[in-house]
Amino acid sequence: ETPYFLISRWAEKRMKASFTISNGLRNFFIATGLSSKKKMSLIHYGFDMPKHFESKGDSGFRLAPKQLLIAGRLIEFKGHKYLIDAMPKLVGEFGENVKLLIAGTGNLEGELRHKVDELNLTRNVVFLGYSKEVGRYMSNSDVVVVPSISEGFGVVFLEAFSAKTPVVSWDVPAGNELMEHGKSGYLVKPYDVMALANQLVDILNNKESQSAVVDSAHEHLSNYFNLDRMIKETIQFYSQAIGN
Image 1 (cartoon, rainbow, N blue to C red):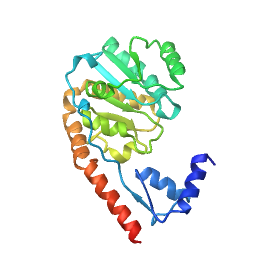
Image 2: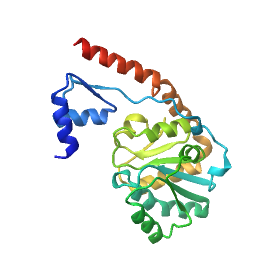
Image 3: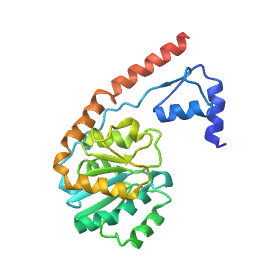
Image 4: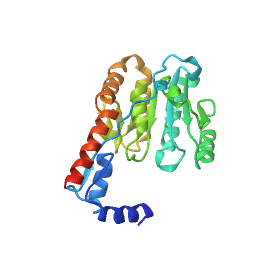
């Protein structure tokens, strides 16, 4: 039992009601007995996204004709290794015209750099480190990849929706909660590196046909994952909890 689990169990026993940010987390709390269906509500995040996620056409953040981005801490569960393993297929298809940008820092950086060297990908993979310009890189990339083993929510999905850049993730929570395959993003069989590579190749070969997908994702962001809806649901939750 982890400290998180122990603290959550202690806290849940003392609360009349609680809420979580995704169905994946809600199901976890219920399945592990930390909470109950009756007690735990769901309130998805909502955001007013910064304008720098709407900066398409800024050539300073385009490093290759075909550009992929992964953004997040360089830690195990974010799944960078799967994406790097998929890159040789993309390089075989597009050569030096394709680059993967890795934004973030973390304790796996040395290991990931070593993997890039081993696979002879140094010309195709760029480590950006910590960057305040992730939104601009995201907006000027062709695909945002989220190969995490799982995500409690995954704000990066909403950032990509805002940037109008298609997202590819494994078919696991929370990607399969936030996106519908082929409509607002792309879901790939979990941990199947070749399936991931093939999906990325398909998108990069058909960039001009992605407008329907990114428009649908952006509309979903605007209509549902907004700050007003989240605030309204949060106020309603506390009003009911206090009333009960």
